[in-house]
Length: 349
Image (cartoon, rainbow, N blue to C red; front, side, top):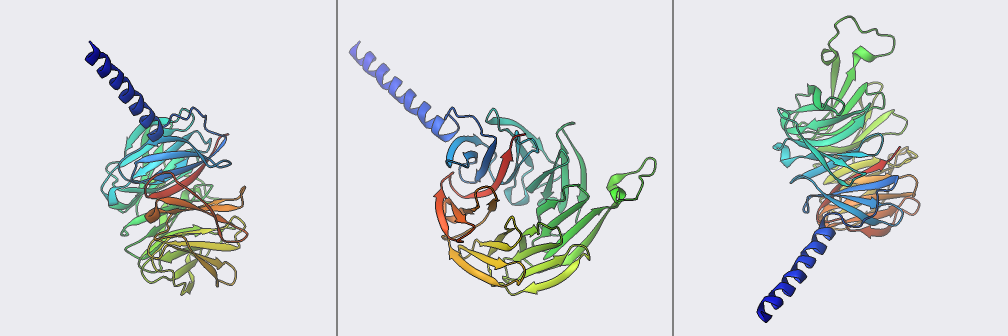
Protein backbone atom coordinates (compact mmCIF):
# COMPACT_ATOMS: atom_id res chain seq x y z
CA UNK A 1 0.00 0.00 0.00
CA UNK A 2 2.83 2.39 0.89
CA UNK A 3 4.51 1.58 -2.41
CA UNK A 4 1.30 2.42 -4.25
CA UNK A 5 0.95 5.78 -2.42
CA UNK A 6 4.57 6.61 -3.17
CA UNK A 7 4.07 5.77 -6.83
CA UNK A 8 0.86 7.86 -6.97
CA UNK A 9 2.63 10.86 -5.42
CA UNK A 10 5.49 10.59 -7.89
CA UNK A 11 3.03 10.33 -10.74
CA UNK A 12 1.27 13.51 -9.60
CA UNK A 13 4.60 15.35 -9.40
CA UNK A 14 5.61 14.17 -12.87
CA UNK A 15 2.20 15.12 -14.30
CA UNK A 16 2.39 18.58 -12.77
CA UNK A 17 5.92 19.06 -14.12
CA UNK A 18 4.89 18.02 -17.63
CA UNK A 19 1.93 20.38 -17.49
CA UNK A 20 4.18 23.26 -16.49
CA UNK A 21 6.66 22.35 -19.23
CA UNK A 22 3.90 22.29 -21.82
CA UNK A 23 2.64 25.67 -20.66
CA UNK A 24 6.10 27.14 -20.96
CA UNK A 25 6.62 25.63 -24.38
CA UNK A 26 3.30 26.49 -25.98
CA UNK A 27 1.10 29.13 -24.32
CA UNK A 28 -0.07 29.27 -20.75
CA UNK A 29 0.59 32.82 -19.64
CA UNK A 30 -3.12 33.53 -19.45
CA UNK A 31 -2.49 36.98 -20.91
CA UNK A 32 -4.51 38.19 -23.85
CA UNK A 33 -2.94 39.45 -27.05
CA UNK A 34 -2.51 43.24 -26.90
CA UNK A 35 -3.94 45.55 -29.55
CA UNK A 36 -0.44 45.89 -30.96
CA UNK A 37 1.67 42.74 -30.81
CA UNK A 38 5.07 41.65 -32.07
CA UNK A 39 5.08 38.33 -33.93
CA UNK A 40 8.32 36.33 -34.09
CA UNK A 41 9.08 32.91 -35.55
CA UNK A 42 11.48 30.30 -34.17
CA UNK A 43 12.62 27.78 -36.77
CA UNK A 44 14.12 25.36 -34.26
CA UNK A 45 11.16 25.28 -31.89
CA UNK A 46 8.57 25.49 -34.68
CA UNK A 47 6.61 28.19 -32.88
CA UNK A 48 5.11 31.61 -33.44
CA UNK A 49 5.72 33.81 -30.40
CA UNK A 50 3.30 36.59 -29.54
CA UNK A 51 5.21 39.33 -27.71
CA UNK A 52 4.04 42.40 -25.80
CA UNK A 53 6.18 45.13 -27.45
CA UNK A 54 6.00 47.35 -24.36
CA UNK A 55 7.31 44.87 -21.78
CA UNK A 56 8.90 42.40 -24.25
CA UNK A 57 7.04 39.63 -22.42
CA UNK A 58 6.27 36.51 -24.43
CA UNK A 59 2.51 36.06 -24.08
CA UNK A 60 2.12 32.89 -26.13
CA UNK A 61 4.08 30.31 -28.06
CA UNK A 62 1.90 28.74 -30.73
CA UNK A 63 3.01 25.62 -32.64
CA UNK A 64 3.50 25.94 -36.41
CA UNK A 65 4.95 23.74 -39.16
CA UNK A 66 8.44 22.29 -39.38
CA UNK A 67 10.21 25.09 -41.27
CA UNK A 68 8.55 28.47 -40.64
CA UNK A 69 10.22 31.39 -42.43
CA UNK A 70 8.04 34.51 -42.73
CA UNK A 71 4.84 35.72 -41.06
CA UNK A 72 2.26 38.45 -41.64
CA UNK A 73 -0.90 39.54 -39.83
CA UNK A 74 -4.26 40.24 -41.42
CA UNK A 75 -5.40 43.85 -41.71
CA UNK A 76 -7.57 43.53 -38.60
CA UNK A 77 -4.65 42.11 -36.62
CA UNK A 78 -6.59 39.04 -35.50
CA UNK A 79 -5.06 36.39 -37.75
CA UNK A 80 -1.51 35.49 -38.73
CA UNK A 81 -0.25 33.64 -41.81
CA UNK A 82 2.99 31.65 -41.57
CA UNK A 83 4.92 30.28 -44.56
CA UNK A 84 6.14 26.69 -44.19
CA UNK A 85 9.03 26.64 -46.62
CA UNK A 86 11.26 23.56 -46.52
CA UNK A 87 13.81 25.00 -48.94
CA UNK A 88 11.13 25.14 -51.62
CA UNK A 89 9.77 21.62 -51.04
CA UNK A 90 6.91 22.12 -48.56
CA UNK A 91 3.45 23.46 -49.34
CA UNK A 92 1.67 24.98 -46.35
CA UNK A 93 0.44 28.27 -45.00
CA UNK A 94 -0.40 28.02 -41.30
CA UNK A 95 -3.24 30.25 -40.16
CA UNK A 96 -3.10 31.34 -36.51
CA UNK A 97 -5.87 32.85 -34.39
CA UNK A 98 -4.03 35.64 -32.56
CA UNK A 99 -6.96 36.45 -30.28
CA UNK A 100 -7.54 32.87 -29.08
CA UNK A 101 -3.77 32.23 -29.38
CA UNK A 102 -4.12 28.90 -31.18
CA UNK A 103 -3.67 27.29 -34.62
CA UNK A 104 -6.69 27.80 -36.84
CA UNK A 105 -6.03 25.81 -40.02
CA UNK A 106 -3.36 24.70 -42.47
CA UNK A 107 -3.69 25.69 -46.11
CA UNK A 108 -2.29 23.27 -48.68
CA UNK A 109 -0.74 25.51 -51.35
CA UNK A 110 -0.19 22.74 -53.90
CA UNK A 111 0.48 22.86 -56.80
CA UNK A 112 2.52 25.83 -55.55
CA UNK A 113 5.55 24.62 -53.59
CA UNK A 114 7.90 26.36 -51.19
CA UNK A 115 5.91 29.31 -49.81
CA UNK A 116 8.58 31.59 -48.33
CA UNK A 117 7.40 35.19 -47.91
CA UNK A 118 3.88 36.51 -47.41
CA UNK A 119 2.04 39.83 -47.51
CA UNK A 120 -1.57 40.67 -46.61
CA UNK A 121 -3.25 43.25 -48.88
CA UNK A 122 -6.87 43.86 -49.90
CA UNK A 123 -8.13 41.12 -47.63
CA UNK A 124 -5.94 38.42 -49.18
CA UNK A 125 -2.63 36.68 -48.43
CA UNK A 126 -0.07 36.96 -51.26
CA UNK A 127 2.95 34.66 -51.10
CA UNK A 128 6.01 33.58 -53.06
CA UNK A 129 6.18 29.93 -54.10
CA UNK A 130 9.91 29.50 -54.58
CA UNK A 131 9.77 25.84 -55.58
CA UNK A 132 7.31 26.66 -58.35
CA UNK A 133 8.88 29.96 -59.52
CA UNK A 134 5.57 31.64 -58.82
CA UNK A 135 3.43 33.93 -56.71
CA UNK A 136 0.16 32.76 -55.23
CA UNK A 137 -2.82 34.34 -53.49
CA UNK A 138 -5.14 32.95 -50.83
CA UNK A 139 -8.62 34.36 -50.21
CA UNK A 140 -9.78 33.80 -46.59
CA UNK A 141 -13.38 34.60 -47.59
CA UNK A 142 -13.61 31.61 -49.94
CA UNK A 143 -10.91 29.46 -48.34
CA UNK A 144 -9.26 28.98 -51.73
CA UNK A 145 -6.16 29.86 -53.69
CA UNK A 146 -7.77 32.22 -56.20
CA UNK A 147 -4.83 33.47 -58.30
CA UNK A 148 -1.24 32.70 -59.23
CA UNK A 149 1.36 33.88 -61.69
CA UNK A 150 4.71 32.43 -62.68
CA UNK A 151 7.83 34.56 -62.76
CA UNK A 152 9.99 32.10 -64.69
CA UNK A 153 12.83 33.11 -62.39
CA UNK A 154 14.88 30.94 -60.03
CA UNK A 155 14.15 31.19 -56.30
CA UNK A 156 11.35 33.75 -56.26
CA UNK A 157 11.88 34.52 -52.60
CA UNK A 158 10.69 37.79 -51.03
CA UNK A 159 7.55 39.77 -51.87
CA UNK A 160 6.11 43.28 -51.63
CA UNK A 161 2.53 44.06 -52.66
CA UNK A 162 1.50 47.70 -53.07
CA UNK A 163 -1.37 48.92 -50.84
CA UNK A 164 -3.72 49.03 -53.85
CA UNK A 165 -2.62 45.51 -54.93
CA UNK A 166 -1.79 46.76 -58.44
CA UNK A 167 1.97 46.16 -58.22
CA UNK A 168 4.00 43.22 -56.91
CA UNK A 169 7.76 43.14 -56.49
CA UNK A 170 9.82 40.01 -55.86
CA UNK A 171 13.50 39.15 -55.64
CA UNK A 172 14.65 36.07 -57.53
CA UNK A 173 17.78 35.00 -55.68
CA UNK A 174 19.48 32.55 -58.03
CA UNK A 175 18.52 34.44 -61.20
CA UNK A 176 19.85 37.67 -59.72
CA UNK A 177 16.77 39.64 -60.75
CA UNK A 178 13.78 41.58 -59.48
CA UNK A 179 10.33 40.97 -60.96
CA UNK A 180 7.99 43.95 -61.32
CA UNK A 181 4.45 42.71 -61.85
CA UNK A 182 1.74 45.22 -62.77
CA UNK A 183 -2.00 44.60 -62.99
CA UNK A 184 -2.71 46.47 -66.21
CA UNK A 185 -6.42 45.67 -65.97
CA UNK A 186 -6.73 47.81 -62.85
CA UNK A 187 -4.66 50.76 -64.01
CA UNK A 188 -6.30 54.20 -63.65
CA UNK A 189 -8.48 55.08 -66.62
CA UNK A 190 -8.69 51.52 -67.91
CA UNK A 191 -12.10 49.87 -67.84
CA UNK A 192 -12.40 46.13 -67.43
CA UNK A 193 -14.03 44.59 -70.52
CA UNK A 194 -16.90 42.10 -70.14
CA UNK A 195 -15.76 38.61 -69.12
CA UNK A 196 -12.26 39.91 -68.40
CA UNK A 197 -9.66 37.47 -67.11
CA UNK A 198 -7.54 39.38 -64.59
CA UNK A 199 -4.81 36.73 -64.46
CA UNK A 200 -4.10 37.38 -68.13
CA UNK A 201 -3.70 41.12 -67.65
CA UNK A 202 -0.65 41.12 -65.40
CA UNK A 203 2.61 42.13 -67.06
CA UNK A 204 6.11 41.37 -65.83
CA UNK A 205 9.29 43.38 -66.18
CA UNK A 206 12.46 41.60 -65.09
CA UNK A 207 15.29 43.84 -63.91
CA UNK A 208 18.79 42.37 -63.62
CA UNK A 209 20.47 43.11 -60.27
CA UNK A 210 23.10 40.68 -58.93
CA UNK A 211 23.02 36.99 -58.19
CA UNK A 212 22.12 36.48 -54.54
CA UNK A 213 19.74 39.47 -54.40
CA UNK A 214 17.39 38.44 -51.63
CA UNK A 215 16.37 40.97 -48.97
CA UNK A 216 14.78 44.12 -50.36
CA UNK A 217 12.54 47.02 -49.46
CA UNK A 218 10.62 49.80 -51.16
CA UNK A 219 11.30 53.35 -50.02
CA UNK A 220 8.44 54.95 -48.05
CA UNK A 221 7.75 57.34 -50.96
CA UNK A 222 7.40 54.36 -53.32
CA UNK A 223 10.03 55.64 -55.75
CA UNK A 224 12.91 53.22 -55.22
CA UNK A 225 13.52 49.55 -54.54
CA UNK A 226 16.80 48.60 -52.84
CA UNK A 227 18.10 45.04 -52.76
CA UNK A 228 21.42 43.63 -51.52
CA UNK A 229 23.35 40.67 -52.89
CA UNK A 230 24.56 37.96 -50.53
CA UNK A 231 27.20 36.90 -53.06
CA UNK A 232 29.07 40.05 -54.04
CA UNK A 233 27.82 42.42 -51.33
CA UNK A 234 26.51 44.97 -53.83
CA UNK A 235 23.36 47.04 -53.48
CA UNK A 236 21.10 47.44 -56.52
CA UNK A 237 18.72 50.40 -56.66
CA UNK A 238 15.74 50.30 -59.02
CA UNK A 239 13.77 53.32 -60.25
CA UNK A 240 10.24 51.92 -59.92
CA UNK A 241 8.60 54.47 -62.23
CA UNK A 242 11.09 53.74 -65.00
CA UNK A 243 11.24 50.04 -64.09
CA UNK A 244 15.00 49.90 -64.52
CA UNK A 245 18.23 49.80 -62.54
CA UNK A 246 19.24 53.34 -61.63
CA UNK A 247 22.35 52.71 -59.51
CA UNK A 248 24.61 50.00 -58.17
CA UNK A 249 26.61 50.49 -54.99
CA UNK A 250 29.56 48.43 -53.78
CA UNK A 251 28.10 48.07 -50.31
CA UNK A 252 30.51 45.36 -49.15
CA UNK A 253 27.64 43.62 -47.36
CA UNK A 254 28.67 40.03 -48.14
CA UNK A 255 26.16 37.51 -46.87
CA UNK A 256 23.40 40.15 -47.01
CA UNK A 257 20.11 38.65 -45.88
CA UNK A 258 17.48 41.34 -45.21
CA UNK A 259 17.22 45.05 -46.06
CA UNK A 260 14.83 47.64 -44.59
CA UNK A 261 14.27 51.37 -44.81
CA UNK A 262 13.77 53.27 -41.57
CA UNK A 263 10.21 54.66 -41.26
CA UNK A 264 11.36 58.16 -42.27
CA UNK A 265 13.11 56.77 -45.35
CA UNK A 266 16.43 58.38 -44.44
CA UNK A 267 18.42 55.24 -43.68
CA UNK A 268 18.68 51.64 -44.86
CA UNK A 269 19.57 48.70 -42.60
CA UNK A 270 21.17 45.57 -44.07
CA UNK A 271 21.72 42.38 -42.06
CA UNK A 272 24.33 39.73 -42.87
CA UNK A 273 24.05 36.04 -42.09
CA UNK A 274 27.69 35.59 -43.02
CA UNK A 275 29.32 38.26 -40.85
CA UNK A 276 26.67 38.87 -38.18
CA UNK A 277 26.88 42.59 -38.90
CA UNK A 278 24.13 45.16 -39.27
CA UNK A 279 25.20 47.87 -41.73
CA UNK A 280 23.58 51.29 -41.93
CA UNK A 281 23.44 53.37 -45.13
CA UNK A 282 22.31 56.92 -45.79
CA UNK A 283 19.49 56.62 -48.35
CA UNK A 284 20.19 59.95 -50.04
CA UNK A 285 23.98 59.84 -50.36
CA UNK A 286 24.00 56.01 -50.58
CA UNK A 287 27.04 56.00 -48.32
CA UNK A 288 27.72 53.70 -45.39
CA UNK A 289 27.17 55.30 -41.97
CA UNK A 290 28.43 52.56 -39.65
CA UNK A 291 28.44 48.84 -38.87
CA UNK A 292 27.51 47.05 -35.67
CA UNK A 293 28.48 43.48 -34.88
CA UNK A 294 25.40 41.68 -33.57
CA UNK A 295 26.72 38.13 -33.38
CA UNK A 296 27.46 35.27 -35.74
CA UNK A 297 24.58 35.80 -38.15
CA UNK A 298 21.83 38.42 -38.59
CA UNK A 299 18.62 37.93 -40.58
CA UNK A 300 15.05 39.32 -40.33
CA UNK A 301 14.59 43.07 -39.66
CA UNK A 302 11.44 44.77 -38.36
CA UNK A 303 11.13 48.51 -37.77
CA UNK A 304 9.18 49.86 -34.79
CA UNK A 305 8.16 53.45 -35.61
CA UNK A 306 6.32 53.84 -32.31
CA UNK A 307 9.23 52.66 -30.20
CA UNK A 308 11.98 54.28 -32.28
CA UNK A 309 13.77 50.94 -32.47
CA UNK A 310 14.34 48.00 -34.77
CA UNK A 311 14.21 44.26 -34.10
CA UNK A 312 16.84 42.12 -35.83
CA UNK A 313 16.65 38.32 -35.71
CA UNK A 314 20.13 36.96 -35.01
CA UNK A 315 19.34 33.48 -36.27
CA UNK A 316 22.79 31.99 -35.67
CA UNK A 317 22.84 33.34 -32.11
CA UNK A 318 19.29 32.35 -31.07
CA UNK A 319 18.15 35.81 -30.01
CA UNK A 320 16.60 38.99 -31.38
CA UNK A 321 18.65 42.18 -31.04
CA UNK A 322 16.96 45.52 -30.34
CA UNK A 323 18.52 48.49 -32.13
CA UNK A 324 18.06 52.13 -31.09
CA UNK A 325 17.14 54.07 -34.24
CA UNK A 326 18.72 57.25 -32.86
CA UNK A 327 22.07 55.94 -31.65
CA UNK A 328 22.25 52.93 -34.03
CA UNK A 329 23.45 50.82 -31.11
CA UNK A 330 22.20 47.60 -29.52
CA UNK A 331 19.77 48.41 -26.70
CA UNK A 332 18.74 44.90 -25.63
CA UNK A 333 17.95 41.31 -26.54
CA UNK A 334 14.85 39.16 -26.76
CA UNK A 335 14.74 35.34 -26.67
CA UNK A 336 11.79 33.74 -28.47
CA UNK A 337 13.40 30.37 -29.25
CA UNK A 338 16.07 28.82 -31.45
CA UNK A 339 16.93 30.32 -34.85
CA UNK A 340 14.53 33.29 -34.92
CA UNK A 341 13.84 34.76 -38.36
CA UNK A 342 10.49 36.12 -39.58
CA UNK A 343 9.08 39.14 -37.72
CA UNK A 344 5.84 41.10 -38.13
CA UNK A 345 3.40 43.44 -36.41
CA UNK A 346 -0.21 42.58 -35.62
CA UNK A 347 -2.42 45.60 -34.87
CA UNK A 348 -6.00 44.79 -33.91
CA UNK A 349 -8.65 47.03 -35.40
